[in-house]
Image (cartoon, one colour):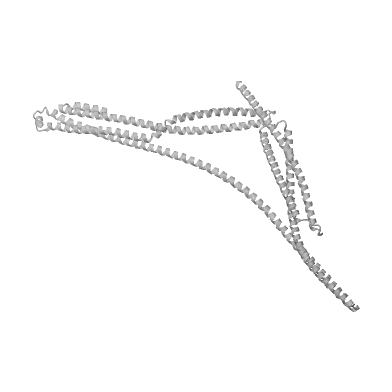
Length: 603
């Protein structure tokens, strides 16, 4: 019951938090909607201003076209009194062109501003839609949809205006090309007309000179006629005929001059038209080539930018791979060093074991030799003692043998055997003392070589405790996450079973459930990795402890073997001294046998 109440309180707190979060997101949506409305108003103002500027541009374009038509009409007019200076027309055309360029620059800036505004609105609209994917629909959804529709309409209007501006730009470019072509034609026509005018002036001057000369001849003839006597009818008729011939010749000269001028004009006109056609074709080709080159340059710039981004990404990936490679090399080097150290420790330990086993075998062999010599000495002593005992009942024979030199030889043999045994015991003692010194030296060298491993062994308990603490913490987090998953699954099941539950809340809870499941899975993976690391560290620690225990047991065995060897040497010395004393005193072999049995029991 208490758990159910706690769960209910927890769900109530969770729903309160969700309500507060939804309210905050609703306020944010409202603020974003206000920003969108403000941007929409600004876009509407920009669009209106742009439309006004487009109307102004159209008006200016119409004025420019009218001015061009007027200039064309003035150029085509044949009245010599109606002449407009072409320099002024060119200056006005340049001014118009600068105005058109400035207007185009302003139009481009306006398009850039509109593009930035549309990008900002699209980004905010996308962010608003992303937020709406995890939050339930606010009450003012219709208002938001109306704002979105108005925004789409505004974007459509902007797109239409952009296309119109592009068309106007193309028209202005075409008009500019046509005006430049007409201006070139007018300049060429003017130059041709100036040449024709000069030629006509020369011909006119020649005709004037001819007229003057003819007038002079007429005056001379008139003077001569006045000075002469009255002419007859026949002479008058001849003079009239001559005047008519002269007039006909003058008319023929005039007609010839007019025909030649007209032919020259027509030829020049045809040549100018052909040149204009060629220039127009060349201009169109250059324009198409220019557009193609601009498109190719834009494509190449985009391709270069993409290549630069790909190069940066590859460089970053290369640096990351190099870092990972260096880290892996360092880990591999550290692992190889540790393996080498462990192998060296194992080799040293095996060498020490082999040396110790060899020393133990040598000592066992020496001990066997000593035992065999002791048995031989005891066997040699017992017959020498038994001979006088058996010869006493016979009386004279034994005394004769002792007198012949046998009893005096046994003490010398005993002394020699005792000396040899004493020397052997001294050698055994020296070897026993030398072996521990060698063992101590080898142990010191091995400890000096394995100082790192023995220094690292005490760190294993701390690492194990830290790892166990981390595992406990991860298990606690995993249990908490499991409880959280159980609560979320129960809440999701309850909300899915209830028909009044909002879909947004169910989606949010399911997303949170997936996130908690992912975190739980990550915690389990980390726990498994830590368990593997702990297992490996425990194996290392167990191997180190096993080596240390083996070394300790080996040291104990060696110390016990050394103690037994020292005891054997001491007992051998006491035995040798006792045998010498018994030989000197002439003790019975029964006591020697008892001492030998005691020695064997001790060994």
